[in-house]
Image 1: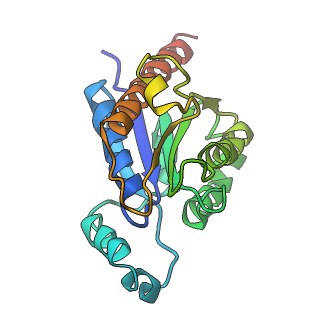
Image 2: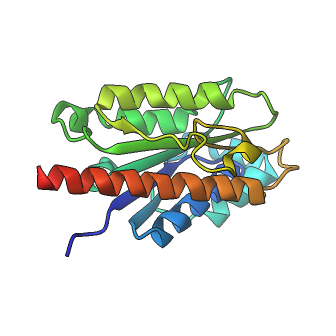
Length: 206
């Protein structure tokens, strides 16, 4: 019997939106038959900054039990789904620093032929969601990875409207993750598992 497809969901979240989307993607990847690790990037901000924002402090406490991602987790995975809120249309420094620690694996060719995908959030409707995901995907090309975006592969994708990955507009915390975003996370997770499983089987057969 073949081993389950292994999926690492690695995210950075300050006030909790990305953490919630990450949990949804992990949940649906497990339901699709994958073995999943839900992981967070290490925090770089000083404690004073975190404590100054009640939502940030609350999320830090609520996710204290989520393990911090390591390069070993990426080596382990057949597929990796990265999540980051947008920062000036780009990936957060916390997630980018983790990605930058993968140079050793990259040099050994251990990042190639894995499936990669991404998710994001922003405060406003045109706050850089697409540019953040596209910036994130630049790294995957350097890895020699297989970028698996959800596309418009399910009619429900026309509700959230983002073919690049799951995204959410949180309106500075006033719009919690809703059913539209949860459905987008489901579609993305199932597609990642489907393609990663097919790729894994094909490589094993070859």
